[in-house]
Image (cartoon, rainbow, N blue to C red; front, side, top):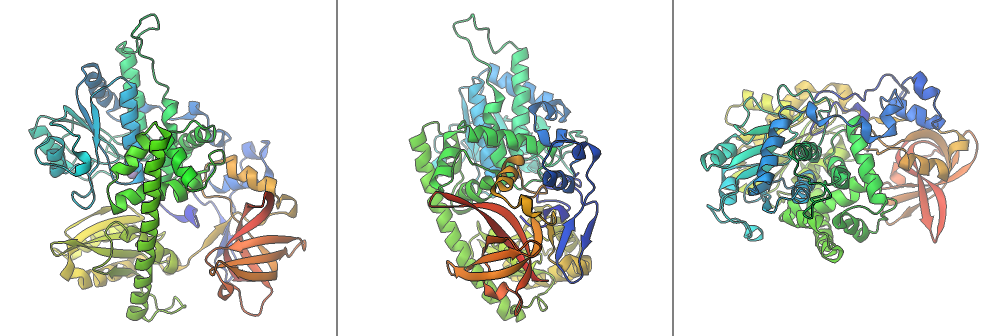
Length: 621
Ligand SMILES: [Mn+2]
């Protein structure tokens, strides 16, 4: 979580966010920028903590309504184009007990979407429902004609999916489908109706589906364009419930066969998890969804799988925060889709038996360890490769403006993470490629603020015909497929294009902060208040501060972290601090005074709680 408010979009960015930086001041020779937005009268007059007023203002909040997180303030589902048409089709299928197949995606957003759709359809009384999630190695992303054939029982699927039997009446896609023109055509040929729910940007042509629900399709008035796939699925099911209610499907209590109307809030744990794990910007609407999900989890009302995943990672259920979605549960779920088959993750989220859920969670945990190891090895190779190619040492002076890397041993499911790590290290747009068989390689790219990655690929493909076979993506992340023997050409074209587009200031790695903290607020209480004040995440970053300290003491712990005792310059008050993945090399030489970018955190040691500063950036004063 670093300089998120600067980004003009995420990997699923729609139009520019409401969270904008209104003004800021940068000190000379510093890579620290203090956010400094004006606090509105409404916030100023409120009873919020004085620091929170500023923190919220810095994140574009002007009205209290934006941070009160009431379900009443959730946007109405009817704002989504064609949602009533989609709800009519799905509710009729339920009434007639038709067979529905949910087709998901192999990431955490796709898995939570899929689990939500399965759970709600069953809760609405549909008996004949199943799911299918394409395996990235065999089918790739989306509702492809091949996956439709598997769905229809025409070709045999994967072992995990042998429970499928021929031909669903209706396919509902979640977190994918908006670009599946051929797949929908194939389904239509086979007489299978398709309802698409998705949140990805639409191409020039839309698939010929019976209905499409997607805030990012032309003509959709739904204002919260950065909702996740699981949010769209949730909205559709709200509409389906309303349609069923209208058809008197939920019978009165007097009847013996009473079918209770499900409470949709029951599913917000899944919505919250998928939303944060997909790294979509946390706009007002997403924050309401995430906050309610978090509250349900903390009240021990989450599904067994989420509890099991928290528990196996040693995290508390009552203390669950949005960071746990991003750093604990998300990666464990995603490990299944990266290394093997996302069905394991979906089964974990579908299970109502804790022991069974825990077994799935244990498998996911093991896969995550494996993923981490693979990623670590790849990162080491990549670093060596970069040093050889570009003679890059500690200085970033000789780093090219754009990096493209390929190794035939690299893992297809992990190259995206590798690209992220390298981007973090060198602050450059990066593509990492893996072998995809048949002479093809697949690349996954990550961008830096100021550069729209998909636009870069679009420009390259127009300038160099036949270089890229297939590409897609967003501002901050993109993917492509091409022939292996064209890699060097791509490397050159990528560097050329990026050099033409990036401004020199885009190459500075800026840390944005909320300013200084008065000594009276340097407390455990403030830290706890911040933790639960709001769901923090993409484009709504956790509060982070900067101040000048004197280094009293330092030592290296765990071989690669720096533990510090710091005295605040203005008061002389002393604080314990830790800087992860930093060593004494990161301390300015020959100086005792340093400027730190830090968060307030609580350290628990042998039952004793104390304030600890988590230091993210250090520079000379
Ligand atoms: Mn998604």
